Amino acid sequence: MKGYVQVYTGNGKGKTTASLGLAIRAAGAGLGVFVIQFMKQGMYSEIKALEKFDNIFVEQYGAGQFVNGKPSDAERAKCRQGYERLCRIIEAGNHDLVIADEANMACFCGLLSAEDLLHLIDIKPDHIELVITGRGAPASVMDRADLVTEMTVIKHYYQQGVVARVGIEK
Image 1 (cartoon, rainbow, N blue to C red):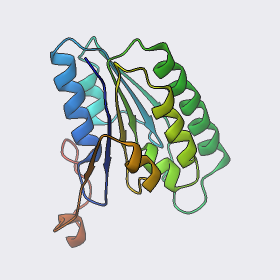
Image 2: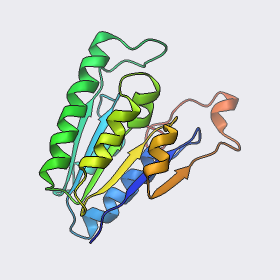
Image 3: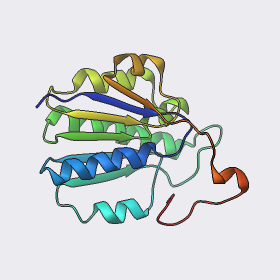
Image 4: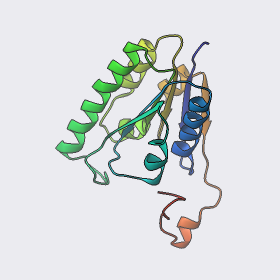
């Protein structure tokens, strides 16, 4: 089966959720899934759920702090470590679906470059489906992708002061 490059971007809710829904679908079909989450650290509800699957592997590469403005040295180091791990995973070709969660946002924050993300596409074996999520996807990455979905906010209860709820947003 040929693998394609998908990008989920935009300011709307649901980019990670969509990619993890695809991971569950792939796992249900017996495919091997590897998820690397940039800029995230913690036992979120979705991580707990994904642990129930024998063929979904998740690794997080975040310093556990919200990046607002200039990223910390710890966040830079974790991101670089995650990127190098992701390159090795893709090159090894042992998974059918590889998800680079928040890689676009890491690029937007200056932790990765557009060239880093394009390199992932360049080294991807033909059989791997690669999904890159996060706000602010570089135009060059969207141009190279086979599928681009932009999540757009039309209305969000966050604007009325609703905080992230366990099991729904986190």
